[in-house]
Length: 458
Ligand code: ARG
Image 1: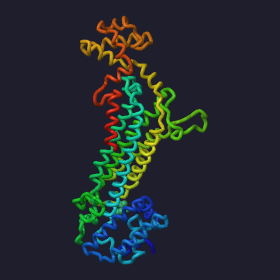
Image 2: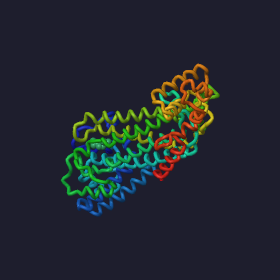
Image 3: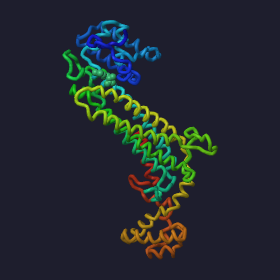
Image 4: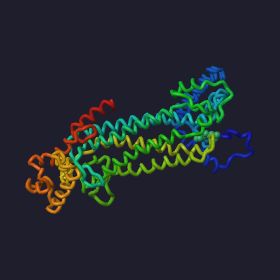
């Protein structure tokens, strides 16, 4: 009779439908490694405190080692009847080592056990994601370095605004992913506290040593209130919010990659291995990876809302609702991890087309602001300079030419302050080079920002 974990209290078993409805083993078995790690730390503490014997501890260690190897070998038999990862492992332990297995759960509940498992899982996930963010940043810094001098139009409202360097544009994303890494590090501080010892909700009557368990598991501290420790999942929500921002940044970048790869724009090409063709149109090469990443951002945003909604109606302390935290959390980790890995790889497969970028920057009067600034430097108030250049742009629009195509005498019709030196400021190179201060687009600033990031990324 497998799996009637609390039978004496019950006069009939749950129906098969309820069993399936309440079970979590088929998704929470991914916590197995952390569940074992937590159990071993708990057992070590129980033995150290004299709550179980040294022999019990030895048996538990031996049994858990066997279970781990069974899981690794894919030979562990996961049973729906045993509801979740915790009961599956505990039951197998007892099969293997007898009474010591039955003593493991002394002073512990699945409520503090599962909260501990999730925190251990999340800590590892945060460390992975942080390393992947760093990897993507490095790939983008490489791309920026190769294109410190490459000029493309910068846009506001999707209208040509001012020329920028492609290196500067890539470094904008490096900044965003840098803040994402900071948010992960900040979230990690609150993840890295130990719930174990809270037992079901009120603590335990056994003389436990929570700090010892915290130290064994590498937690910075214990959770200081048992009711809070077993019930809140705010740390998971925080993580999902940080993950949603990672995906938001990925999605913005994706949108740009898709636009840039459109033949109408043609600023970049993405290596074939990241694109797919069409089953009907032989000529097609579609940027599937960035499109899909943009789409997957939706599901990560959805998971954040799921967890917020899951939490909002729960009275203290643990409620079974919390079992629903896992799938959104796991899928968030999987989606963000895969996406970051693929993007770091894809960044190396981006071919920049400087001629197309340059041609686009030469349309749309990208250096009009430079002309206005030029007039200000000659003594005109900025508002008057703005108006004078607006007239010049309008006249270019009528003639179908660029500001730099106007002859000096034509330009002087808009302001007598304009001299021969104006043509230097109307070039794309002059425009970007002039924005030479911290945070500006000048190639020199791009190189300095790259050096700074190289140091930060190690
Ligand atoms: N599978 C449960 C979860 O994921 C473990 C905790 C269950 N505790 C309980 N008292 N039913 O949250």
